[in-house]
Length: 509
Image 1 (cartoon, rainbow, N blue to C red):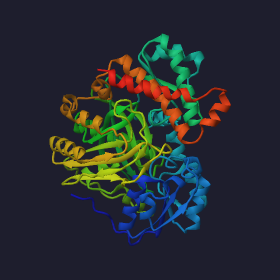
Image 2 (spheres, rainbow, N blue to C red; image 1 turned 180 degrees about the vertical axis):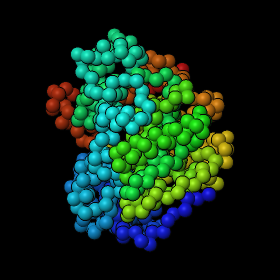
Image 3 (cartoon, helix red, strand yellow; image 1 turned 90 degrees about the horizontal axis):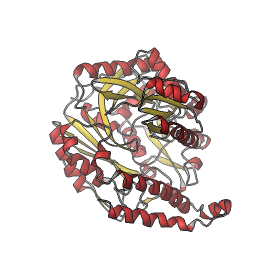
Image 4 (cartoon, one colour; image 1 turned 30 degrees about the vertical axis):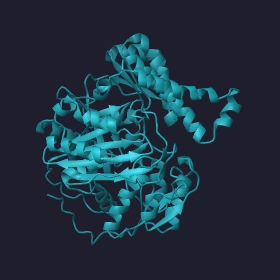
């Protein structure tokens, strides 16, 4: 049964939306806006001149440059484009400016509706230390730990107090960056300095907090939607435990481990947290689930990559809801969920090393059939560059039950052919075919257990891949000469790491 959308005839007019993003999420927003009779304006970098979102929008504005900092992350350029084209609203998608309080404030200052939460909510929930404090005040269960920034002087005592194993996490973190698991005291100081350095490099903020490492955790999240009148609803949960390096690969709904009672408790906790910060729009509250208990992890103040999992199961268009709420409407009633849905992220990367794969797509075959949805901006001839995230597409399926959804997803994955770059498709297939996944009794360590390489080989592959990635991206960006000048060393020998990766990959059992 589909959600019933209240009439929009009395809405303050949103006639034109600037879509401040690229790729599949930009297309996703453009399509819903077109169905609602709303014009769209795309923005694009030099690298995206021929991108599908540029062709499908009502009009497009060239921002220039290739790097995100020169285009999609440049708040001044993006807001100026919205003003110049007479946009009433701006949709940030996910990533880029979607969780940037300065971007939200710039829209407010320009008289443009930011289709997301207010700047204060973004700021509070984006700071993991502050978010934990607010969650605690709202009565949301927390993983045992220290909510404040921990320094080296108090680190050892704090870890003893919490109890090993512990996690060190960046206060301004996200996307799996700035996280270290420490299993014993002798590893603590080194991990602390590494976490701080990574946090500083990724977020410009080296604050780190400490919490208990939950054994065999499941990563379960609640999708919420809140309006400007205090209404908050939630659309069930998504199971996101299939991860590598804290990056999600397979998501499904519902979670096989949740009872109706725990689901209701998690939904209430998510809505209570949203009310505590006067939240508006789409958001996701993430929890760890272990032994029937759940603990607050973080809140993402945007539309999630995996939102189609919820849409397929609840028959709702979450982007449409965002636009309606931005125009002052109340949240729509939540329909009864139906069946089971699964999403697989398709990344341009080597399936063994997770090393990014660059190149041109020369052949493409897309899946279809009942209950199959592919969100992508793929086309034959697309150049996969080093400038943006490696995700190429999201394959989403819906079935009457979990068994049918898994079978449907396997069939669709086999139909999907992308030639010209390596992809993560083999990893997704191996996961869906594993006994552990099929049983429904799995946790965030499932991919590590499915990896047949010995631990030492996995560690060396990870280190070599990370080093080679940094060099390859610098090479593709034309930075090799600058690096050699700055360091006084010839950067060329680093290409040897690529050969070492390939030899190690082939020799590993």
